Length: 152
Image (tube, rainbow, N blue to C red; front, side, top):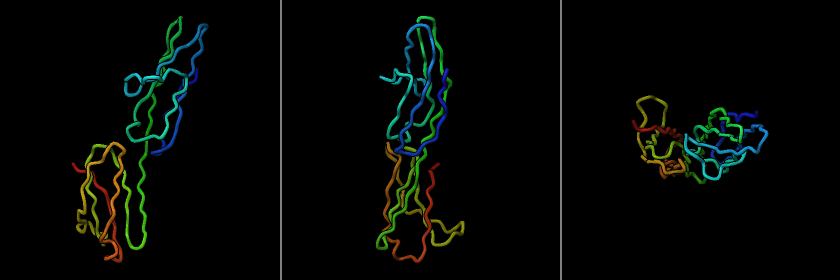
């Protein structure tokens, strides 16, 4: 029997889970995500494409034949979000990543003293978990630091 393995991937990646069982009669498969049936996921392999943060969670498969059934190990898929900074002609554009539906505060400072952080913007992330922010004030500062905090 081949068991699926837990995985960690980046947003936009593709991955495959595999579960294989042997029987004297044909084997039928059904994959589950967070204890819910995945429609159309009826092969020994479960390909997932263009991963998004909402794809992260627990997966398992059920294999059945005339002689009975077997359940795979429950495995986790972690989908990591990445932040990106682009600087062009003095403008700073941040692509920030977080969990969809949660609200974040973007803070900035010109020094790294704990009391120096000030909020610049607040946003509730959409289903892709990304937020793009362009800082129009960046050219006015010789140095500027950013941090993203989830609201309580």
